[in-house]
Length: 90
Image 1: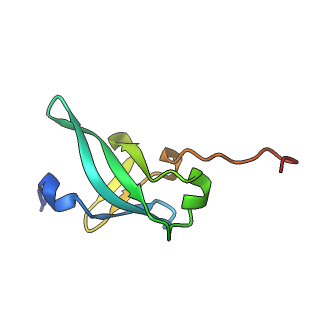
Image 2 (image 1 turned 90 degrees about the horizontal axis):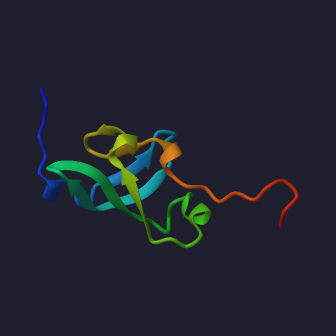
Image 3 (image 1 turned 135 degrees about the vertical axis):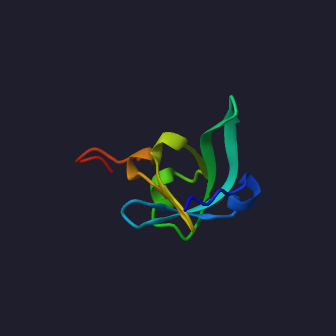
């Protein structure tokens, strides 16, 4: 059975990548034309991915990258912009 949640019920929900890495919590939903367009996620300092985000406090994840929604939100790892160094750079 499909469970319908209100936006107020998802604020504070934990966000994980599809590879199981913890990212943070949902701060708000971005709505456009009565549809959810994206999710603003506050990145946790405890997250292993926070080092890759160059000190950013949060991300906006487009809704198309959401893979599953239930007790937690699972997103595709490709939604996270990585700033990796090229080989040989320091």
